[in-house]
Length: 480
Picture (cartoon, rainbow, N blue to C red):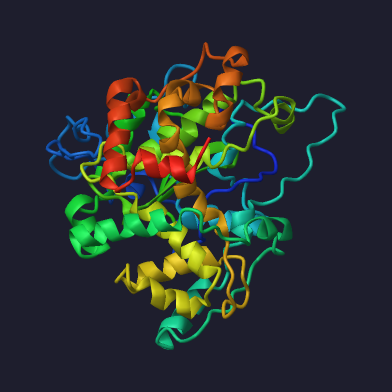
């Protein structure tokens, strides 16, 4: 499943200091050789004319396909044509849609090259300018280092998962890693914070008091899991809303720890979506997070004088996080009837507890909040990644950035120009006012859901109320 960005490549970003979630390589899956376009689309040969989805944005459902399936066996080209309009004159692929390569094939080529194939996290999207060829006699670019979160992903996670559950949850996994552990990053994220622990547990308890369990909350509010065809239809409509059809590669996979991740792979902006997390009422929120926030701010950033690391130093910019992930997380729950900040709160809590507990102790502790043992395992792996012997206390604290950023933005929401925050690119809300005069704004994109600022701000009030927060509490936590 791909919204193909065409043949014009993008420049890869440089070394990062902030990172998003990583892809896991799939095992035991082989891509059929010599498959035709029709073979590739057998699971999704056409979109149902009656398909209508209730999105969490309140803006209507997925668009409907007008063509019905042909009677009798179709030719191999027919279903391909239904999904993909003809190429324009001159052969440019920009704006047409084709299927994604399987994640198995992508990861196999990555392993064969001995690298991660240019995979970069969402915070690298600032550098989406088109590639510039090396001039004659120019020195070649240095080899890019692989995404550090890929290095932090245990290579034996499936084997250790099996051992853990066979031992009845009494075995502390012993993780191994493909790459040498990045000590600078581990050092940066080794300490957990308890600054917002009370707010995190308060949000978790608010959900449990209302629904009894997270599983009940998810079933009541998330809606049904969507088929690949329904996911594809919703993605296509959302891309049209943002005016970015044909710019982003979209992959559907079962190999993510997170629900979705925006990254740059092989010099192209790529959105990977976890099929197990694509629910009817929450998918559009996921797209607002990844496309409406990470991607659009990245594209806007490419036009700014601070788009490079040198430019950021020249202008004295603060780190993009926690603003980047805080804003994206708020956009995930924007327009939900019950916009609980459950995931951000549980990640914050899990990381804090991981810093004090072994893997087994953490797994048992999370049972108070999450019944599904498989989901608890995933939260524990996220919090313990980077460790080899998980019998010791220790954490990878980056996942606390979501709730941290959320609370800071809500605290200062009345003084933030949110449209300008999007237009200026990957900047902190603290830098917006002083950058206004020197930003390149003529080509800036503003997410469609940010056009009606009055409604947008009303949703923030709804989020605060639903999660039992208050301005008095936020001011006490984050004084000026």
